[in-house]
Length: 113
Image (cartoon, rainbow, N blue to C red; front, side, top):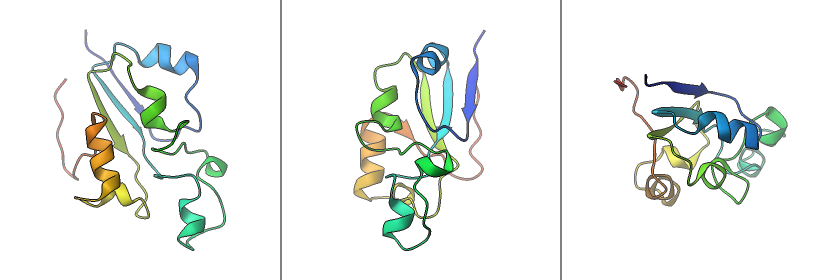
């Protein structure tokens, strides 16, 4: 049967995690921050995303790059902080998310596996 994963907090994408996610029909994944120092740069906090247990969406070690190429049906970011520019329709960050094959679902989105 079909299955999905829901990871609202993830600090690192390990080989074990990649193995578990491979073959999933859907993965909801931690999209808290676009970049690790986002809250600091925007003057909203003193901790990095990593320091709070959240991997960045972007960057060589970010979620998009780390999960690229895995056999996953649909990939959706969730738990997105309001500081994350990927929330903004038309932003360069949102375009990068979508070009990489990820989705940012709107509130109320219903999913059928």
